[in-house]
Amino acid sequence: MLASHLAKEISEAFPTLAFSRSEDGRVITITAPCAEVGSIEIQDEEHELTVFVGNFTHWHVGCYEDGYSEAEKAEYIASRTVEFLDDLFADKIVMWGSHSGGGGFYNREEAPRKAKKGWFGISMKDCERREWVWSGRVGG
Image (cartoon, rainbow, N blue to C red; front, side):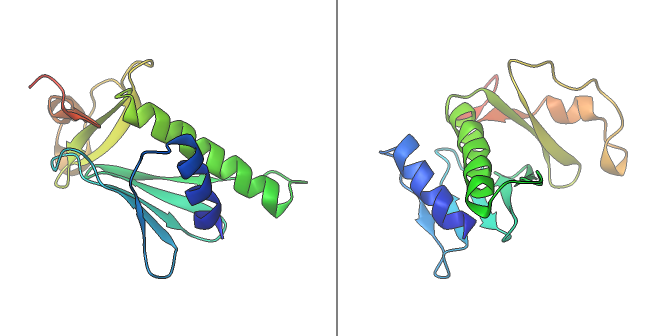
């Protein structure tokens, strides 16, 4: 189970981080320090993880390389997820958007996407004015 492997990796990488697991062990939840950001929920989908990034978006972490054993795939997936969490907790990941207009995230070390029309005709530029990092809202 990917969630079990990931829980072990999270515990090793972030020994003081409090997180919980669902009764069936398939969902890991990390509570955000800021309610506006929303918690991180990581769901085990058997062959990949779905990482729900706060109140903003989600992404899929998988490994589809030929020749990898199931253990190697689990290690790769957990490693990529822990790298993301490390950047997130260091406020390197900027999250933007809303439930009504879609959302996303980008790494501060990379340029954000250019403004364009988003879902429901809302300009991505408008969404980017409301940005958050793990510790709270960017710019107040």
